[in-house]
Image (tube, rainbow, N blue to C red; front, top):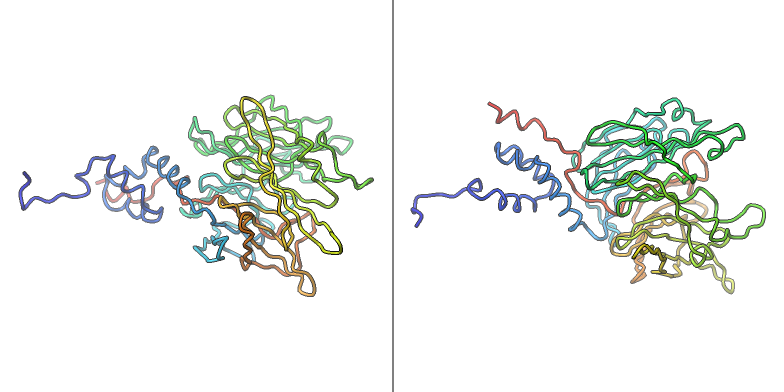
Length: 414
Protein backbone atom coordinates (compact mmCIF):
# COMPACT_ATOMS: atom_id res chain seq x y z
CA UNK A 1 0.00 0.00 0.00
CA UNK A 2 1.40 3.39 -1.01
CA UNK A 3 2.31 5.87 1.70
CA UNK A 4 -0.03 8.83 2.18
CA UNK A 5 2.92 11.15 1.65
CA UNK A 6 4.07 9.51 -1.61
CA UNK A 7 3.42 11.31 -4.88
CA UNK A 8 3.15 10.05 -8.42
CA UNK A 9 4.18 12.11 -11.42
CA UNK A 10 3.69 11.77 -15.15
CA UNK A 11 7.25 10.44 -15.43
CA UNK A 12 6.30 7.45 -13.27
CA UNK A 13 3.97 6.20 -15.99
CA UNK A 14 5.17 3.44 -18.35
CA UNK A 15 6.53 4.94 -21.57
CA UNK A 16 3.72 3.42 -23.62
CA UNK A 17 1.06 5.01 -21.41
CA UNK A 18 2.84 8.36 -21.50
CA UNK A 19 3.06 8.20 -25.29
CA UNK A 20 -0.67 7.44 -25.60
CA UNK A 21 -1.48 10.52 -23.52
CA UNK A 22 0.88 12.81 -25.43
CA UNK A 23 -0.44 11.59 -28.78
CA UNK A 24 -3.75 13.28 -27.99
CA UNK A 25 -2.16 16.73 -27.76
CA UNK A 26 -2.20 19.14 -30.71
CA UNK A 27 1.09 19.74 -32.50
CA UNK A 28 1.76 23.13 -30.88
CA UNK A 29 1.31 21.64 -27.41
CA UNK A 30 3.63 18.75 -28.32
CA UNK A 31 6.36 21.15 -29.39
CA UNK A 32 6.02 23.08 -26.11
CA UNK A 33 6.12 19.77 -24.22
CA UNK A 34 9.62 19.04 -25.51
CA UNK A 35 10.84 21.77 -23.15
CA UNK A 36 9.46 20.08 -20.02
CA UNK A 37 12.29 17.59 -19.50
CA UNK A 38 14.75 15.35 -21.28
CA UNK A 39 12.45 12.30 -21.20
CA UNK A 40 9.60 14.12 -22.88
CA UNK A 41 11.94 15.55 -25.51
CA UNK A 42 13.32 12.08 -26.33
CA UNK A 43 9.85 10.58 -26.50
CA UNK A 44 8.30 13.24 -28.76
CA UNK A 45 11.25 13.39 -31.16
CA UNK A 46 11.39 9.60 -31.48
CA UNK A 47 10.60 8.53 -35.09
CA UNK A 48 8.15 5.89 -33.85
CA UNK A 49 6.22 8.50 -31.86
CA UNK A 50 6.18 10.87 -34.85
CA UNK A 51 4.82 8.10 -37.11
CA UNK A 52 2.13 7.26 -34.54
CA UNK A 53 1.18 10.95 -34.22
CA UNK A 54 0.81 11.27 -37.99
CA UNK A 55 -1.40 8.17 -38.26
CA UNK A 56 -3.62 9.41 -35.45
CA UNK A 57 -3.83 12.89 -36.95
CA UNK A 58 -4.96 11.48 -40.31
CA UNK A 59 -7.53 9.25 -38.61
CA UNK A 60 -9.03 12.12 -36.60
CA UNK A 61 -8.72 14.93 -39.16
CA UNK A 62 -11.62 17.32 -39.76
CA UNK A 63 -14.00 15.98 -42.42
CA UNK A 64 -14.80 19.40 -43.87
CA UNK A 65 -11.69 21.53 -43.35
CA UNK A 66 -10.25 23.38 -46.36
CA UNK A 67 -6.76 24.87 -46.59
CA UNK A 68 -6.99 27.80 -49.04
CA UNK A 69 -3.92 29.16 -50.84
CA UNK A 70 -4.21 32.41 -52.77
CA UNK A 71 -2.05 32.32 -55.88
CA UNK A 72 -0.56 35.78 -55.25
CA UNK A 73 1.98 35.68 -52.43
CA UNK A 74 2.54 39.42 -52.83
CA UNK A 75 -1.14 40.12 -52.09
CA UNK A 76 -1.83 37.39 -49.55
CA UNK A 77 1.12 36.48 -47.33
CA UNK A 78 -0.89 33.89 -45.42
CA UNK A 79 -3.06 30.82 -46.05
CA UNK A 80 -6.37 30.11 -44.35
CA UNK A 81 -7.84 26.97 -42.84
CA UNK A 82 -11.64 27.25 -42.96
CA UNK A 83 -14.75 25.13 -42.64
CA UNK A 84 -16.35 24.13 -45.94
CA UNK A 85 -19.72 24.02 -44.18
CA UNK A 86 -19.77 27.33 -42.31
CA UNK A 87 -16.78 29.25 -43.79
CA UNK A 88 -15.58 29.66 -40.17
CA UNK A 89 -11.88 30.52 -39.96
CA UNK A 90 -9.96 27.94 -37.94
CA UNK A 91 -6.46 29.35 -38.31
CA UNK A 92 -4.16 31.45 -40.50
CA UNK A 93 -0.66 30.36 -41.50
CA UNK A 94 2.01 32.82 -42.60
CA UNK A 95 3.87 31.81 -45.77
CA UNK A 96 7.57 31.68 -44.79
CA UNK A 97 9.05 32.01 -48.29
CA UNK A 98 8.68 34.03 -51.46
CA UNK A 99 8.61 32.92 -55.09
CA UNK A 100 10.31 34.48 -58.11
CA UNK A 101 7.08 35.68 -59.70
CA UNK A 102 5.16 36.27 -56.48
CA UNK A 103 2.72 33.50 -57.46
CA UNK A 104 2.09 30.24 -55.65
CA UNK A 105 0.12 27.04 -56.11
CA UNK A 106 -0.24 23.74 -54.28
CA UNK A 107 1.04 20.61 -56.03
CA UNK A 108 0.00 18.10 -53.41
CA UNK A 109 -0.28 17.32 -49.72
CA UNK A 110 0.51 14.15 -47.78
CA UNK A 111 0.06 13.80 -44.01
CA UNK A 112 0.35 17.52 -43.34
CA UNK A 113 3.38 18.05 -45.59
CA UNK A 114 2.72 20.31 -48.58
CA UNK A 115 4.55 20.61 -51.87
CA UNK A 116 4.14 24.03 -53.48
CA UNK A 117 5.53 25.65 -56.59
CA UNK A 118 5.67 28.99 -58.32
CA UNK A 119 2.52 29.07 -60.46
CA UNK A 120 4.12 31.15 -63.22
CA UNK A 121 4.51 29.03 -66.35
CA UNK A 122 8.28 29.62 -66.54
CA UNK A 123 8.85 28.46 -62.95
CA UNK A 124 6.06 25.92 -62.39
CA UNK A 125 7.39 22.54 -61.19
CA UNK A 126 10.94 23.95 -61.34
CA UNK A 127 10.93 25.99 -58.13
CA UNK A 128 9.68 23.75 -55.33
CA UNK A 129 8.91 24.24 -51.64
CA UNK A 130 8.18 21.63 -48.98
CA UNK A 131 6.21 23.16 -46.10
CA UNK A 132 4.65 22.01 -42.85
CA UNK A 133 2.42 24.97 -41.84
CA UNK A 134 1.89 23.72 -38.28
CA UNK A 135 5.60 23.47 -37.55
CA UNK A 136 6.41 26.65 -39.52
CA UNK A 137 9.22 24.75 -41.21
CA UNK A 138 9.99 24.55 -44.91
CA UNK A 139 12.66 23.47 -47.37
CA UNK A 140 13.36 25.05 -50.74
CA UNK A 141 14.37 22.42 -53.29
CA UNK A 142 16.77 24.27 -55.53
CA UNK A 143 18.97 21.49 -56.90
CA UNK A 144 18.28 19.00 -59.68
CA UNK A 145 19.97 16.14 -61.51
CA UNK A 146 18.97 17.85 -64.76
CA UNK A 147 19.56 21.48 -63.90
CA UNK A 148 20.52 22.56 -67.43
CA UNK A 149 17.35 21.03 -68.89
CA UNK A 150 15.08 22.12 -66.04
CA UNK A 151 16.19 25.76 -66.10
CA UNK A 152 15.29 26.33 -69.77
CA UNK A 153 11.54 27.09 -69.82
CA UNK A 154 11.56 27.56 -73.60
CA UNK A 155 12.90 24.07 -74.32
CA UNK A 156 11.57 22.02 -71.41
CA UNK A 157 8.38 21.31 -69.51
CA UNK A 158 8.21 19.81 -66.00
CA UNK A 159 5.66 18.01 -63.85
CA UNK A 160 6.08 17.00 -60.20
CA UNK A 161 4.31 14.90 -57.60
CA UNK A 162 4.54 14.38 -53.84
CA UNK A 163 4.22 10.94 -52.27
CA UNK A 164 5.11 8.67 -49.37
CA UNK A 165 7.14 5.46 -49.36
CA UNK A 166 5.75 3.58 -46.38
CA UNK A 167 8.44 0.87 -46.35
CA UNK A 168 11.18 3.51 -45.97
CA UNK A 169 9.03 5.94 -43.95
CA UNK A 170 10.14 8.59 -46.42
CA UNK A 171 8.37 11.47 -48.13
CA UNK A 172 9.50 11.88 -51.72
CA UNK A 173 9.10 14.24 -54.65
CA UNK A 174 9.19 12.97 -58.22
CA UNK A 175 9.89 15.28 -61.15
CA UNK A 176 9.69 14.57 -64.88
CA UNK A 177 11.54 16.86 -67.30
CA UNK A 178 10.31 16.80 -70.91
CA UNK A 179 12.77 18.26 -73.41
CA UNK A 180 11.62 19.69 -76.72
CA UNK A 181 12.95 17.92 -79.84
CA UNK A 182 13.69 19.45 -83.24
CA UNK A 183 10.00 19.15 -84.16
CA UNK A 184 8.99 21.15 -81.08
CA UNK A 185 7.47 18.11 -79.37
CA UNK A 186 7.92 17.60 -75.63
CA UNK A 187 7.20 13.89 -75.94
CA UNK A 188 8.92 13.15 -79.21
CA UNK A 189 12.40 12.00 -80.15
CA UNK A 190 13.96 13.14 -76.86
CA UNK A 191 13.15 10.79 -73.98
CA UNK A 192 11.87 12.45 -70.79
CA UNK A 193 14.18 12.45 -67.77
CA UNK A 194 12.95 11.65 -64.26
CA UNK A 195 14.40 12.27 -60.80
CA UNK A 196 13.28 11.70 -57.23
CA UNK A 197 13.96 13.63 -54.02
CA UNK A 198 14.17 11.92 -50.63
CA UNK A 199 13.21 14.01 -47.62
CA UNK A 200 15.04 11.59 -45.34
CA UNK A 201 18.30 11.84 -47.31
CA UNK A 202 17.64 15.39 -48.58
CA UNK A 203 19.05 14.56 -52.01
CA UNK A 204 17.89 14.17 -55.61
CA UNK A 205 18.82 11.13 -57.69
CA UNK A 206 18.06 10.02 -61.23
CA UNK A 207 15.47 7.36 -61.96
CA UNK A 208 17.10 5.02 -64.46
CA UNK A 209 15.06 3.67 -67.37
CA UNK A 210 12.05 5.69 -66.27
CA UNK A 211 10.07 5.00 -69.49
CA UNK A 212 7.66 7.94 -69.21
CA UNK A 213 5.01 7.32 -71.86
CA UNK A 214 2.64 10.26 -71.38
CA UNK A 215 2.81 14.04 -71.26
CA UNK A 216 1.22 14.81 -67.92
CA UNK A 217 -0.69 17.90 -66.87
CA UNK A 218 0.97 20.03 -64.20
CA UNK A 219 -1.44 19.10 -61.37
CA UNK A 220 -2.42 15.70 -60.04
CA UNK A 221 -3.18 13.75 -56.87
CA UNK A 222 -1.54 11.17 -54.58
CA UNK A 223 -3.68 8.13 -53.72
CA UNK A 224 -2.57 4.88 -52.06
CA UNK A 225 1.10 5.00 -52.92
CA UNK A 226 0.76 6.46 -56.42
CA UNK A 227 0.67 9.92 -57.91
CA UNK A 228 -1.62 10.43 -60.91
CA UNK A 229 -1.56 13.11 -63.60
CA UNK A 230 -4.11 13.53 -66.37
CA UNK A 231 -2.67 13.52 -69.85
CA UNK A 232 -2.18 17.09 -71.03
CA UNK A 233 -4.91 17.16 -73.67
CA UNK A 234 -8.08 19.16 -74.06
CA UNK A 235 -11.29 17.12 -73.81
CA UNK A 236 -12.42 18.27 -77.28
CA UNK A 237 -10.66 18.61 -80.60
CA UNK A 238 -10.12 22.07 -81.99
CA UNK A 239 -11.22 21.00 -85.45
CA UNK A 240 -14.45 19.15 -84.77
CA UNK A 241 -15.54 20.15 -81.28
CA UNK A 242 -16.32 16.49 -80.62
CA UNK A 243 -15.23 14.71 -77.42
CA UNK A 244 -12.23 12.44 -77.52
CA UNK A 245 -13.15 8.78 -77.24
CA UNK A 246 -11.86 6.54 -74.47
CA UNK A 247 -8.57 5.72 -76.16
CA UNK A 248 -7.67 9.42 -76.14
CA UNK A 249 -8.18 10.08 -72.41
CA UNK A 250 -5.28 8.75 -70.36
CA UNK A 251 -3.50 9.15 -67.05
CA UNK A 252 0.19 8.95 -66.19
CA UNK A 253 1.03 7.41 -62.81
CA UNK A 254 4.08 6.97 -60.62
CA UNK A 255 4.42 4.24 -57.97
CA UNK A 256 6.49 5.57 -55.06
CA UNK A 257 7.17 2.05 -53.73
CA UNK A 258 8.58 0.56 -56.94
CA UNK A 259 9.56 3.87 -58.62
CA UNK A 260 7.85 2.84 -61.83
CA UNK A 261 5.77 4.95 -64.20
CA UNK A 262 2.56 3.57 -65.65
CA UNK A 263 -0.34 4.63 -67.81
CA UNK A 264 -4.06 4.12 -67.50
CA UNK A 265 -6.89 4.91 -69.87
CA UNK A 266 -10.44 5.79 -68.96
CA UNK A 267 -13.29 3.51 -70.06
CA UNK A 268 -15.92 4.74 -72.50
CA UNK A 269 -18.60 5.31 -69.85
CA UNK A 270 -16.31 7.89 -68.21
CA UNK A 271 -14.87 9.60 -71.27
CA UNK A 272 -18.25 9.78 -73.04
CA UNK A 273 -19.50 12.29 -70.46
CA UNK A 274 -16.84 14.77 -71.58
CA UNK A 275 -18.84 17.11 -73.76
CA UNK A 276 -17.95 20.38 -75.38
CA UNK A 277 -16.44 22.82 -72.90
CA UNK A 278 -16.34 20.34 -70.01
CA UNK A 279 -13.70 20.67 -67.30
CA UNK A 280 -12.30 17.84 -65.24
CA UNK A 281 -9.94 17.28 -62.32
CA UNK A 282 -8.43 14.35 -60.45
CA UNK A 283 -9.21 14.13 -56.73
CA UNK A 284 -9.18 11.67 -53.84
CA UNK A 285 -12.51 10.66 -52.34
CA UNK A 286 -13.45 7.82 -49.98
CA UNK A 287 -9.91 6.50 -50.21
CA UNK A 288 -10.04 6.12 -53.99
CA UNK A 289 -8.88 8.01 -57.04
CA UNK A 290 -11.74 10.04 -58.46
CA UNK A 291 -12.42 12.16 -61.52
CA UNK A 292 -14.75 15.14 -61.23
CA UNK A 293 -16.30 16.27 -64.54
CA UNK A 294 -18.09 19.58 -64.94
CA UNK A 295 -19.90 20.99 -67.96
CA UNK A 296 -22.45 23.66 -68.84
CA UNK A 297 -25.77 22.63 -70.40
CA UNK A 298 -28.84 24.54 -71.52
CA UNK A 299 -32.21 22.81 -71.07
CA UNK A 300 -35.32 24.66 -72.30
CA UNK A 301 -33.51 27.97 -72.04
CA UNK A 302 -32.28 27.26 -68.51
CA UNK A 303 -28.55 26.92 -67.87
CA UNK A 304 -27.61 24.02 -65.60
CA UNK A 305 -24.26 22.87 -64.29
CA UNK A 306 -24.01 19.07 -64.07
CA UNK A 307 -21.18 17.55 -62.05
CA UNK A 308 -20.20 13.90 -62.15
CA UNK A 309 -17.82 12.23 -59.73
CA UNK A 310 -16.33 8.90 -60.81
CA UNK A 311 -14.45 6.58 -58.41
CA UNK A 312 -11.79 4.12 -59.51
CA UNK A 313 -12.01 0.73 -57.81
CA UNK A 314 -9.40 -2.03 -57.90
CA UNK A 315 -9.95 -5.67 -57.02
CA UNK A 316 -8.21 -8.88 -58.09
CA UNK A 317 -6.18 -6.93 -60.60
CA UNK A 318 -9.30 -5.50 -62.28
CA UNK A 319 -9.94 -1.74 -62.46
CA UNK A 320 -13.50 -0.43 -62.65
CA UNK A 321 -14.98 3.07 -62.55
CA UNK A 322 -18.19 3.77 -60.62
CA UNK A 323 -20.36 6.89 -60.93
CA UNK A 324 -20.60 8.06 -57.31
CA UNK A 325 -22.46 11.37 -57.81
CA UNK A 326 -24.35 12.99 -60.64
CA UNK A 327 -25.91 16.32 -59.64
CA UNK A 328 -26.92 19.55 -61.36
CA UNK A 329 -25.84 22.52 -59.26
CA UNK A 330 -27.32 26.01 -59.35
CA UNK A 331 -23.84 27.56 -59.60
CA UNK A 332 -21.10 26.41 -61.92
CA UNK A 333 -17.34 26.73 -61.95
CA UNK A 334 -14.10 24.81 -62.05
CA UNK A 335 -13.91 21.79 -59.66
CA UNK A 336 -11.00 22.19 -57.23
CA UNK A 337 -11.20 19.38 -54.65
CA UNK A 338 -13.59 17.48 -52.40
CA UNK A 339 -13.65 16.96 -48.63
CA UNK A 340 -14.05 13.65 -46.83
CA UNK A 341 -17.65 14.67 -46.05
CA UNK A 342 -18.46 14.94 -49.77
CA UNK A 343 -18.31 18.73 -50.10
CA UNK A 344 -16.97 19.81 -53.48
CA UNK A 345 -15.00 23.07 -53.74
CA UNK A 346 -15.68 25.15 -56.85
CA UNK A 347 -13.90 28.20 -58.18
CA UNK A 348 -16.62 30.29 -59.77
CA UNK A 349 -17.07 33.59 -61.59
CA UNK A 350 -19.89 35.82 -60.37
CA UNK A 351 -20.15 37.75 -63.65
CA UNK A 352 -20.06 41.36 -64.71
CA UNK A 353 -19.67 44.18 -63.83
CA UNK A 354 -17.33 43.22 -60.99
CA UNK A 355 -16.35 39.89 -62.54
CA UNK A 356 -15.39 38.37 -59.20
CA UNK A 357 -13.88 34.92 -58.93
CA UNK A 358 -14.24 33.12 -55.63
CA UNK A 359 -14.75 29.78 -53.90
CA UNK A 360 -18.08 28.19 -53.10
CA UNK A 361 -18.71 24.80 -51.55
CA UNK A 362 -21.56 22.38 -52.10
CA UNK A 363 -22.19 19.14 -50.26
CA UNK A 364 -23.09 16.61 -52.94
CA UNK A 365 -25.32 14.69 -50.53
CA UNK A 366 -27.36 17.52 -49.02
CA UNK A 367 -26.83 20.09 -51.83
CA UNK A 368 -26.04 22.67 -49.14
CA UNK A 369 -24.16 25.67 -50.59
CA UNK A 370 -21.76 28.02 -48.84
CA UNK A 371 -19.78 30.99 -50.06
CA UNK A 372 -16.37 30.70 -48.39
CA UNK A 373 -15.66 34.41 -48.74
CA UNK A 374 -12.56 34.30 -50.93
CA UNK A 375 -12.68 36.69 -53.89
CA UNK A 376 -10.48 38.12 -56.58
CA UNK A 377 -11.40 40.85 -59.06
CA UNK A 378 -10.92 40.15 -62.74
CA UNK A 379 -12.30 36.64 -62.89
CA UNK A 380 -10.43 33.41 -63.37
CA UNK A 381 -7.27 34.29 -65.26
CA UNK A 382 -7.05 32.85 -68.74
CA UNK A 383 -3.33 33.57 -69.03
CA UNK A 384 -1.05 30.58 -69.45
CA UNK A 385 1.42 32.26 -67.11
CA UNK A 386 -0.75 32.04 -63.95
CA UNK A 387 -3.85 29.97 -64.69
CA UNK A 388 -5.42 29.70 -61.21
CA UNK A 389 -6.57 32.18 -58.58
CA UNK A 390 -6.71 29.68 -55.71
CA UNK A 391 -5.58 26.16 -54.88
CA UNK A 392 -6.97 24.19 -51.97
CA UNK A 393 -6.11 21.20 -49.81
CA UNK A 394 -8.92 19.13 -48.30
CA UNK A 395 -6.66 16.59 -46.56
CA UNK A 396 -4.87 18.98 -44.20
CA UNK A 397 -3.77 17.55 -40.85
CA UNK A 398 -1.62 18.81 -37.98
CA UNK A 399 1.42 16.57 -38.06
CA UNK A 400 5.05 16.30 -37.00
CA UNK A 401 6.33 15.61 -40.52
CA UNK A 402 9.72 17.31 -40.93
CA UNK A 403 10.07 17.84 -37.16
CA UNK A 404 13.65 17.17 -36.08
CA UNK A 405 13.63 18.76 -32.67
CA UNK A 406 14.70 22.22 -31.69
CA UNK A 407 17.06 23.86 -29.23
CA UNK A 408 15.17 22.35 -26.29
CA UNK A 409 17.71 19.54 -26.04
CA UNK A 410 20.44 22.02 -25.12
CA UNK A 411 18.55 22.75 -21.92
CA UNK A 412 19.01 19.16 -20.72
CA UNK A 413 22.42 18.39 -22.25
CA UNK A 414 24.41 19.40 -19.18
